[in-house]
Length: 404
Ligand code: SAJ
Image (cartoon, rainbow, N blue to C red; front, side, top):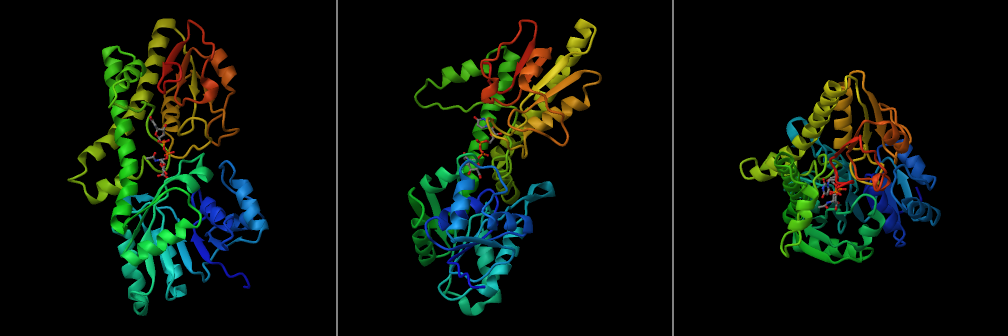
C-alpha cells in the first residue's frame, strides 16, 4: 500500500465521514475505516451513503484530490480518530464495545509520538479505560503516546458548517495530550478550542444533550398541564419568554434522533441515585409520545360515536424533527404505529414530504391527505405544513405548534 495517511478515522458515518472529508480538504491525507465494504467502495468512488447537505461535494473533492481513501482495516498513521457509534444495550446500559474494537485495531499500529482521540459519545471514564487497554498491550508506549477525548457537537443538517465553526472541548488524559490534540484540531477548526481533562470533556457532551432533553421535558410538561387547563401552550410560552431571563423551548410529540433521547441514559446508568431529574426528563419526553397517540385514539372514538362513521385521519410528519428526512428514533413513527394498530376501519393517510417511500407505511401526498381527512394530526412542524388552508369541520390536533 503506497498511500501513507497522516490521519486514520475509524467509523465513516454521520460524523466520521464529514470529519474525514473536512480534514482531507485541509490537505492532510486521511484514511477512513468502516466495517462496511459497501460504504468503503462508495467513498472510494467519490460518492456518499448518507444524506447531509454539501457532504457529497466535500467527499468528491477530497477523493479526487487524493487526500481521502477508505478501507475496512486500520493502517498506520500519526493520528487516530475513533468516531464509531456507542449505542445502549437492554436496560439503557451504554455499550462501548465498538470503541473498544476500534481501539484494539489501532493498538498494534501505535508508535511513539502518535495521537489517539475518541470523538464518540462515551460514558465518563471511557478514555481512561481505553488508555489502560492500550498500555496493558503495549506497556513500552506508556508516557510516549498522546490520548484525548473531543466530542462532536454538530447538528444534523448543518454538519459541514458546524464542524468548522463550532467551539470544541478537548480533554487529554494529561496536559501534553490535551496540547497535542488542540494542535491537531487547530489545523481545520475555526471555532474556539477549549482545553480540559478527558473526564470533563466526556461529561460535557452528556451534559449538553441532557440539558436540552430536560428543557424540552419542561416544555412538554407544560403542554400536558395546558391541555387540562384549557390554555394555548404556544401562546403561554411566547408570553413567558418575554421575561428577560426565561427561555422555554417548544413542546413536541416527544424527543427523537440518535443523541438527545440516548445520551442522558449514559448518565442515569452510571449515576442512578444522583440523576433523578435527568431520568424523569427522559420519562416525561417518552410519555409525551404515548400521550399524543392516546389523544388521537380518543378523538377517533369520539368522532365515531358522534358521526356514526369512522373518521379519515391524516398523520402529518414522520421525521424526528422538522425539515429533515431522518426517521431514526422518531417519536412520530411510534405514534403513527400506535394509531394505525388501533384504527379499525378508519382511513389513515400517513404523510412525510421529505421521504418518497417507506417500508412499513404507505405514504400520501400532504395536500391529498389534508383534503380528505376529518382529523388532521400534526406531529412534525415541516415547512410544507405551515399556512395550510384547513376546513372548519376538520378536527386539528397540533402537537408541534405548526398551526398554533
Ligand atoms: N425538540 C423539541 N423541542 C424543541 C427542540 C427540539 O421537541 O424545542 C425535539 C426535536 O423535535 C427532536 C429532538 O428534540 O425530536 C432533538 O432535536 P434537536 O434539534 O434538539 O437535536 P439533534 O438530536 O438533531 O442534535 C443534538 C444537538 N445537541 C444540542 O443541541 C445540545 C447537536 O448539537 C448534537 O451534536 C447532537 O444532538 C449529537 O450528536 O449529540
